[in-house]
Amino acid sequence: MPVPREVDAIEMGPAERVDAVVTMNQPGVWILGEANDRIRNAGLGIVVEYANRNGAPQWTAPPDTAWDYTIFGQKAGQQAGQQAKTPEPAGGVVPLVFRKKFAGNRWVDHWTINGKSFPKTDPIHVRANSRYRLRFDNQSDEAHPVHLHRHTFELTRFAGKATAGVLKDVVVVPARKQVEVDFTADNPGPTLFHCHQQLHMDYGFMTMVQYQG
Ligand SMILES: [Cu+2]
Image (cartoon, rainbow, N blue to C red):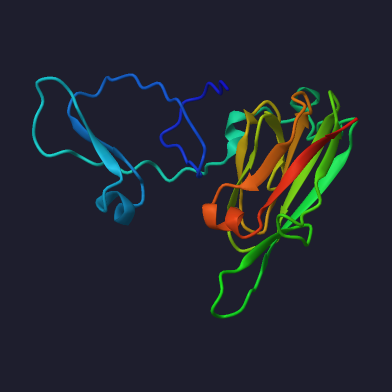
């Protein structure tokens, strides 16, 4: 989904995809790579070499500017000069609380959505063509890239900031923060919702969206 805006760096979670347009107006030999030195030096980078240029590839660190999804959005209610929230969708709010469940010293921890692990999680019931707000409440110390299959959602609140216009199907919910997204149930059929960290998903962090009627 288009989010026209110039940035020096992009932060990406598992399963996120970005198409970035770059104007090549700095001849030289450069490194495009992970901003974290340790990870980049371990291999997560690629050389960008202009024609007829040579020498060792140069790395320049991006400026340490604050980054989150809301820089790509419109502030909800901005026109009115106030931080009004996007009105709550007709279908209502679905609270989803994410927690880690200690499984014992010799076991992998489990993950719960509203206190239950998949396949025992409660499905999210929706009606076709109704619009809903999912309220992700991350009560754990890890960030979770959560993914809703077969639908697109709009970010309406990210870690306390109201926003609008950013359409996605994966959002990274930071540790101990809340994120709200609105979506229209416009694609009937069983639909998965899950964390995209494989180990979290395998140990319970998954539920179903079920269409009624
Ligand atoms: Cu996770």
